[in-house]
Length: 144
Image 1 (spheres, rainbow, N blue to C red):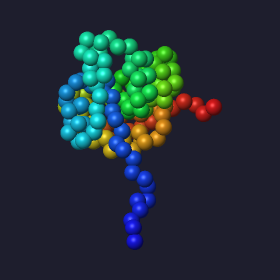
Image 2: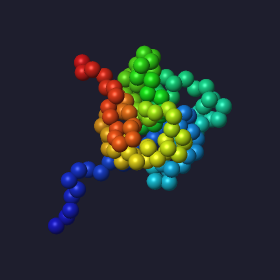
Image 3: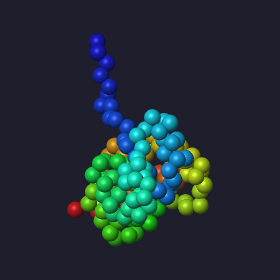
């Protein structure tokens, strides 16, 4: 008798970490867990990563099916950026507290990384907030 998994195994998502979350603390911690992580610097280079417009990196993340981790949930209130999230079907997860240290940001995201990966298996677009005890849907486009 052969064992067949009840649910097909899906690969872990690839992440794009926004510059607001730093270059090392969080990306290195995610990599240490065996995850594939891109930073704006690794994608665009050191100089261009400092000035690449949000609509460009958001679009690139969506086109590459990368899960975005960021600290700026105000994107959902910025029409051009939100339109980019919708157009490119971006899967975004944002810390909602800007006052966390780098280590606190890392710990908060790592405490939810399995939930984030599970939600990220669903097609975008959407924006989730990452809170101390859970993650919650902040935005999803209205059904047509």
